[in-house]
Length: 326
Image (cartoon, rainbow, N blue to C red; front, side):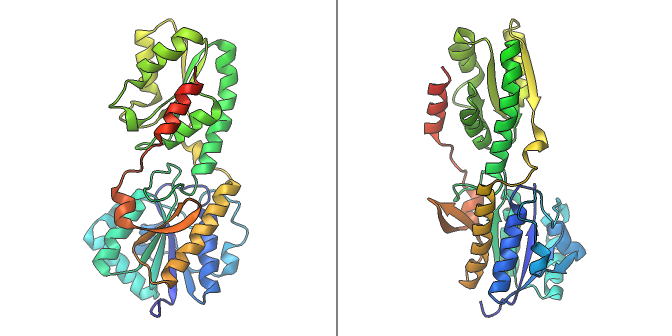
C-alpha cells in the first residue's frame, strides 16, 4: 500500500445503472484515504489515447442519481493485443497511476486480469453488469434497476395481451445468463421464462404450450433471454406460428431500454458499498480481486474465480415459477 499514491478509475463494457454511484464512491473513498484519483475516459481505450483527468470531490458531485457513466465506455480491440496493453502500461506510468479500479462485466475483468498478470499491476474490479452473471457475488451493479425496468414494461404489455387474448414473447437481455428473464418472470407474474441454462435439459417452449397455455389460458406472457442458444423471442414466436397457428403471437424486444434510467436505491447503495470497498481492498494490499457481495457482506473474489466459473441459476426459483404459472 505504501507504493500506491494515485488510483485510476475506468468503466468498461456495457453501461449499467449505478456505475456513476460507483465512480463517486471510489473517488471519495480514495480522497478520504489521502490518495489522488484520475478518471480514465472510454474504458481501456482511454489508456491508449491518454484521455485521463485528475478527479476531485466536485468531479463526482450530483451524479449518484444519473444512469450511464460519466467516464463513458467503449470496446477496445487494441487492448486485447500485447502491443495495446504495452501502450496502456506506458500511459499509466506517464500519468503516475499506481493502481486501477475497473468497473464492468466479465469481458472488462478478463482484460484486467491479463493486464495485471503481465505487468504485476494492482487492479481491483467492481462488478457492473445488468446480466448479474459474475460468479462470487450475489448481485451486480445495474441488475436491480434493469429488473425493475423489465417489470414495468411487462405490466404494460400484459394489458394488451389480456385484452386481445394474445401470447406475448418478451425478449430481455442476458446472452449467457437467465437471471433477468427468470426473476423478471416471477416478479411480473409471467407464465414462463426461457433461459439458456436449462435449454439442453428440456424443451421449454413445448413444456409451456402443453402444460400451461393450451389448457387453461387465453393469454400468456413469456420472458425469453436474448441468447443465441434459445433463438430469442423471434425464434420462439416462429416455432409457435408454425406448430400452433391458432394462437395470436406477438413479440416485444426490450433491448437497450433495460440499461438506461436512474439507478434504484438498491443499486445506489450497492455501488456505493462496492466502490468504497475497492479502495479498502487496495489499502489492505489486495490485488487482482473483484469486490463481491455474499449474504450482504463484502467479499474479495479472485479474478480467476469470478471470470472462469459460471454463476448457477437458482433451481428453486425455476420450480417456483412453474408452480405459480398454473
